[in-house]
Image 1 (cartoon, rainbow, N blue to C red):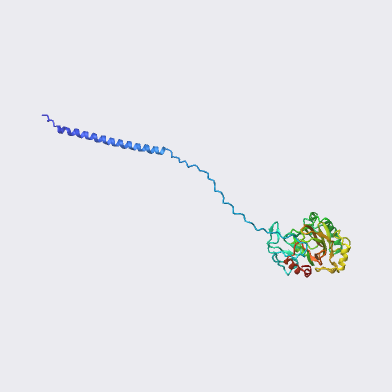
Image 2: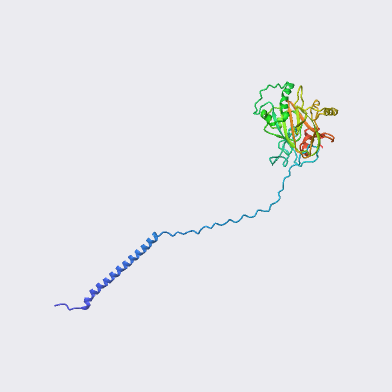
Amino acid sequence: MPTPHDDQALGKPLRSKQKRSAVFIVIVASIAVHVLAGLGLAAVKIIEVLQPEPEFEAPPVVATKPPPPPPPPPPTKRAQRSLPRPQPLAARNPQNMSVPAIEISNSDLSIGGGRGFGGGLGSLGGAVADSIRITSFGFDRAMEGTLEGTLYDFKKNATGEPIKRSWNMSDFKQVIERFQPIVRDFSRTFNISQINRKFYKADKNLYGSYFIIPWGQASIAPKSFGVEGVIAPTLIGAHYVGSFKPTETGRFRFFGRADDALIVRINGTVVLDGSVTLGKGSYSNWRQGGIAKRHDEAQGRRSYFNLPPYFHGMTGDWFTLTEGQSTSMDVFIAEVPGGDFGAYLLIEKDGAPGLKIFSTRPLSDQDKHFLRKLHPDSAQFID
């Protein structure tokens, strides 16, 4: 017999089937939503990665004008060092120069052992010397009014090689006669370039303002010029050249002597040749006048600074100087053939009594002290 129809029983499978369809749709939709969401996020990320990074443009640099430098300080008046006074003719001028003390070695006064003139006096090329050494042949630094001295060796040529000439030093007369033409040739014009081409000279110069060299060993010359052992003290000569400004106007004449050669020239003219010569000839064309010779005889043929009495002093020619006017001067002293040597140069003013030590600059207290210790004869010629 057929089973009767039950609506309730028939609806259960149908509803169950519908439920499953709905759940399936929800799941599929959820999956689709999640997939779409994932794809969207992935697309956004890809876009972010592929999109170029933004470039940030720095703001333009604006050139700024540097601030002006601070104004310079107001000018101040610099204290200027005054130059020494114009140089004098002789030591007659009692004015003293302000200089530090000269240290003199008592063991060897003739070469001025020790250092002196502590500063502010000497100058070379505008530089102030820290110290100045004094010798009988001059200072080791130039000062205003000093004469530049060069020591020559007449036995050697300009390169220092011995001159091929036979000198018999034991024949004093022969040596002098052979040396005379050399000096005469030089003293005619005092041509420095000529003598420099012919003969050897010391590298070091000295600068003289006075010439007092007591009679003694000739080795003092190369020792003073720093060439001891290089230049033997035979057939040597020192030439001084320069200019000075007298502080007096008037007529003057020199008095001096040397063993062996002393020649003095003022403004191009030889005014004294106080050299010692034997036999024929002389070292220059100068000859002492009769009046000057009689004057020396009347004075007793005076000799000073240990020079032997037969090497008495000689009076030179009168010459005129003007205060403040630059005056050129040459002094040449030499030793032939060797052994003992000495020289001195004094000055006399017309109308004024007595002789004075000649100097191209004022004698300071230190100079006077040096000269007095150098030889006692100096005291009577210093004010």
